[in-house]
Length: 375
Image (tube, rainbow, N blue to C red; front, side, top):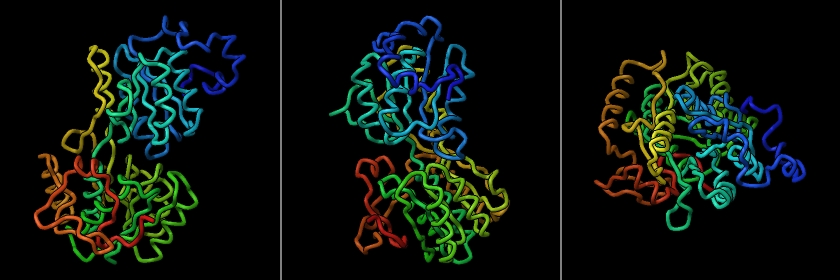
């Protein structure tokens, strides 16, 4: 949370009486604009900025903007996906003079960000995810995302070399398309090492449930998985629990190697610094901001954690070779012949799908070899 206020933004706007007394009810609140930097950018996080995960990755990206002359950054953490986030956005505009806001969490988009887009048509809002649609959403909104499935494929390459049991595990929050792609990519990367490897997945049902994440991790290890990865907001619990059980770890969102330096193989990380600078550069230059922004490893939107000490020379060689192919662009994680885990053909011989196409089609299956269900 920004240190400019001793009081929470949401608390400051909680009552209409307080709002009226301070002149906050109007969308044209004039005060802090006179004191604002040339450009003020707001960031809102659903959890803590130091969660070793989703929120930390965004906060690290926001931090790089603070070094740019003329750019002021305001942040608020631990904001639930409720009307509270609308109050946070409104106060960033009215109190700080923010002209561009990044509400980073999935549940902030509809109805909350869309409501603010309508209320403040001259402000710009960009959401992390794939939900913006030019046919039904306003032009002062937009979405940005990275093709991190390629990172999970590389995680799988490292996992495929490290596993002794030929069983790897995945702790997942919800069976939405991006999560399913990450699970599939992790297994397919491992199967590029050894096609008999299987992946057990357990869904917790929420983005952040520490107890269930620990239980799921323990259950996976109990079933023989000796390399674990995840797609939850904060991988910290998964990493520490798996390492405590002697399993190897592949990280996600940010670099979790400090949590388990000997067991950490590598990790798929976001590189939001590049994305946020792209938006701010356009804003400062007076250019229209793009409404739909995507990129992968080759574009610098995604990066990999350094390989850990447990990664073998053979694993390093295959990892580096695969990464080099991805950096050329056009790498296909999903390619035929391929069936889902119900036996249906999802890709025929020679058929390939880059992640941009997968996003448009919205993946709804788990590939053959994944033990688990989307139901």
